[in-house]
Length: 325
View (cartoon, one colour):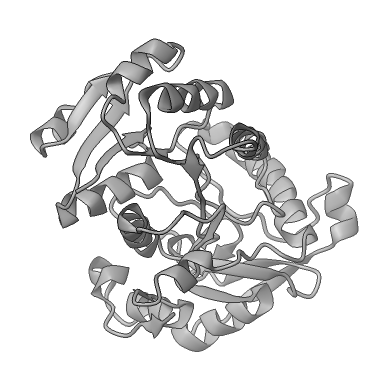
């Protein structure tokens, strides 16, 4: 048994991982929160109300904790949390990452590189706080938007609308991507908590690795639904221009509906300039290699599972076929 604390687990990805840890029932779980959460308390999770600006307060909450998983997006709060981990004697720390490789950062996530550098500097002279960057690439669940395939993960359209028959593509679609379901990500994290060897610095997780154009081909083959491919030019994106005959219906609960299209154009320009321009948004599947006994769902299996059943039954955990890694 490992004593695990999750910071920011009331969010979407964190809540999915917490659900898997609760389901497995192997560890003593605590959630650090700015306010109470009766639902989690009722599930037997210790909810500690903390002030992320107060290192001493965090250190008290972390007393006896061995592993901390972070899902908080603020740089300052994470720095305080890391300092508190060191003060409390925490052994392992997973910073807020949960995305593509460091070479293909999404808009607004530059702070992740700063946190990574801070952790490397912290351990420069001697091991102080073991850490890994959990990087599952793009959650496969996003590909089948708006179909709901996870209980807590919030998805929106980032450029593929299978049912509507549209897809964005940068140039020839030759960019390398990694796709992993959020459920498989949670299972890998659960196994990593028990892993007896040292955590790798870069903790890539891969359900499938393929070029973006190949993904669109697989979508058409596995679902039987043709996609109109709207090609974006990198020269336009680099100038901040979104030149497309189709604008994905980007929706977010924090964005007023009347601002949605303008926000969508801005996000799509930034995201595709970043992901499409790097030519390498794939991760090195380090955790696949360290946990060879795990079987993760590939893109073909996921798509067949979702589109081979009625929408009300669609769920990646129901899949029977998986790939051995």
